Image 1 (tube, rainbow, N blue to C red):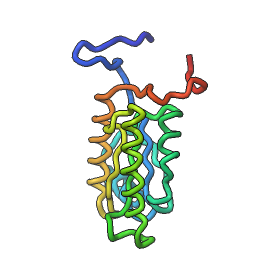
Image 2 (image 1 turned 120 degrees about the vertical axis):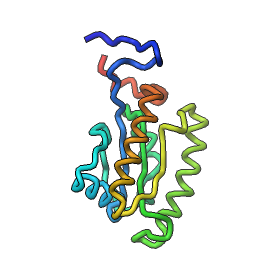
Image 3 (image 1 turned 30 degrees about the vertical axis):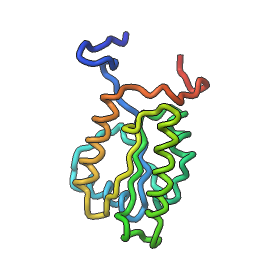
Length: 154
């Protein structure tokens, strides 16, 4: 099936972004579960990785995700002050601020990464956040900046 170009925007027709979501076990993953239990719609393109705490996500994981073909990476954790591990999300906030400046240096659009605070009771917010993020990344098109040539299927 040939890839055709849209005239309205320069992304391929039928493009579905590959989104990776790192979700805190105690809040955001439970929020994703609540969204599923309530049958709220969010794209199946979002692949969730459950982590014990958002502070356990090393910035190298985000870079590696982009290298392996992810079009967007979102990190979801507990609201600041509500972390199960007391101050984990404060570390996350500092670490991701540094990562965003590094991504800017590498030439990756800042819209491809996002940090959100979603509690276990916010299933609707989780679904809305994922829908909005997928829409944003879809408008950017495929990420080729950190693509690993060994992973290319051509």
